[in-house]
Amino acid sequence: RYVNQPPLQFAFTLLTRSLRITHEDLSVRDPEFLGRVDRWMAENASHQAERPLPAGRVPPPMFTPFRLRDLVIPNRVVMSPMCQYVAADGTIGDWHLVHLGSRAIGGAGLVMAEMTDVCRDGRISPGCAGLYEPQHAAAWKRIVDFVHRESAAKIGIQLGHAGRKGATKRQWEGDNEPLPEGRWPLVSASAIPYFPDRSPVPREMTRDDMQKVEADYVAATELADEAGFDLLEIHMAHGYLLASFISPLTNERTDEYGGPLADRMHFPLAVFDACRAAWPSHKPMSVRISAADWLPGGMEPHDSVEVARMLKAHGCDIVDVSAGQTVHDQRPVYGRLFQTPFADRIRQEVGIPTMAVGNISSYMDVNTIIASGRADLCLLARAHLFDPYWTRHAAWMLGWPLPWPDPYRSIERYSPRFEFHFSGERSG
Image 1 (cartoon, rainbow, N blue to C red):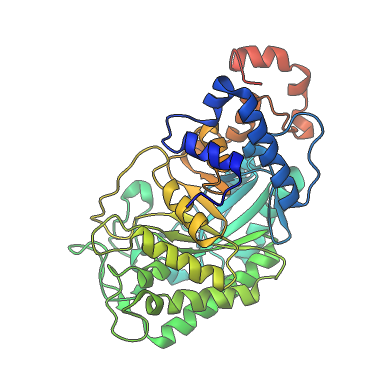
Image 2 (image 1 turned 120 degrees about the vertical axis):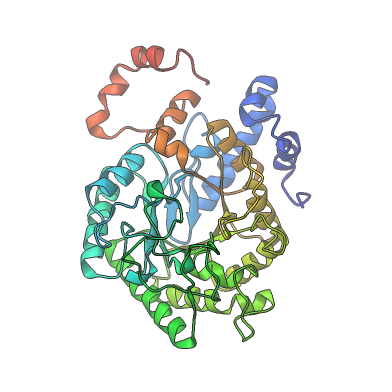
């Protein structure tokens, strides 16, 4: 799988694949070797992004740029899309401005807006964000403009439809628990409820339903472009509507939309194709997939490789590789970087860029993942909830000069004192 990697990267991959040795460990054990790896990585990234290599010290891998079509992301750190459940009838507000704006100022190269529903009946909960009315686009544009004006970050949006996992309480009120009242009608690939004992039974989608949902995705795509988003992601993971077609655990259809994987992909790919046609050709598109369902009989990693091949053939630029959340009785195997091997396998076998996500929380792991070629971008969720300035703190610890916004420039003037109180020591 790795024999075609350049020799330096191949050696680094072998040294770090067990997770016992990281990029930071090698900075102590063999700084000369790591220096060569970092320089190779920086030169390769500079060429790929068509950006000049910084003079002097080369950047750590996580602070190298990455290009997707005409979009150049300034570093490899991505704030993962995380539903906030505080929108008012689909319209986001000040909470989202602070939530996304603070992570952009905090240094992330790309901030991803949460799963944003393409129609009212596609919401997970009453508090979910939407992009199906003109006022929704106007609210999003306020945030997009802030991110572009006040930071170097890029901003993307994830479009989705909840399918059978809709009409539920807000997450902190009961994860995936159905609303006691005020529910809306649900549709899915097959008439299978999420919780067999208490979730509403969704209606199996007809072709007319599919045409309507496809049109909703296209309309949301056009609104996303009007709002100024840099990247568009289609949510095909976690058991939501499009994912319900992909997984054999949730798709029992006997028509051309069920059965073999290629047939189960018909509707998700039709939606992707329609969105790709509506999205500007110079802007990239990503797709989030569940690489495994964590249950026998469901999607397995080798299936996700084939899904990624199909997505690549249809013009997908990068795959956001998650896992699970398809069924209530999943049995995931948690651990540090537990989903990164899925992104790694897809990247190596399909030859498409990937995003790794899942229990990534340290800069040493981000540097290791990027330098070894296991993924091209790293999504951090809880780490960004805990620390909006996670990327800036990582830059500080690595001794990398990430520029501060003008109103915060005084921190550079008093940096020695700040450094002592913040960390006591740093690398570099």
